[in-house]
Length: 319
Image 1: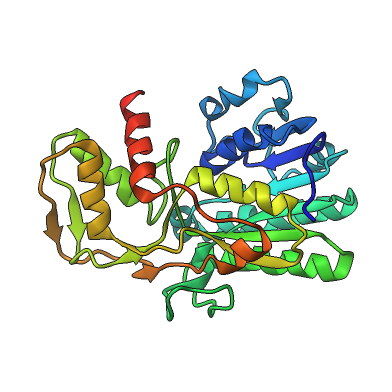
Image 2: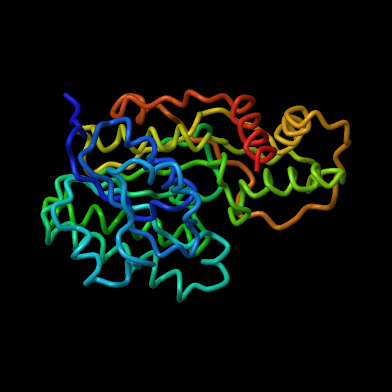
């Protein structure tokens, strides 16, 4: 039996970001009493919330609220019945500034978990990442896949998951963690280590320049639309599954070469891709199994890559 979010008071940490803002919009369809957005706006943008804030149930907690500020977290958590934690520094930032990554992604997550315990929060949904797996040793990757991560970002997400588990066993924290595959869609920035290829290709096409493919384009990933990811968060909040991590993706493998071809088709471009020597990549292949999420959360991706890319292209042309 699933839980209901109807008339619940919700807190979305990182709610002005790419995924977070889509989650806020998805949550409005669950008839909550209130949605409070907690964000320091280092990556999130006020414009991302422009539509959601037209609804009186949505509000932003104070100005530039950081998860490193425990006093502000304490105030934001009061009376919240479901918390979504999406705030984190992105992969390349973590690679270049590991100390800042430790503070935000690890200490900040610890602060969120402690606030959950202090306020006896009934449910937490933690945003993790498929980065915890590193390069795939099997296809598709199930949740029991070895944690072969070699990046500091991935290390912070492993730490976040393990801290969730420790708080569950020590304090009874009720939570689910979501390991996102390569998320794309409207409001996406160019900071993602893998999905940024989409933005870079689109930018070159818009300038009339041929898109660049590094290597032979055989690198393969699981690209999932941001609205599907938002829906997965909603389903995870409603599910009974506890102390578990789930892949969130399509389960479909797309090579970079195929991705570029689809982007050229979506934009109606006749440009021909340029192949250049191999660039440094954190992983070469990553596609996740969706079986566990479908079984425990009732989640299955609904947006095809073709449809999602057309939606992304349309959103850029309407800016």
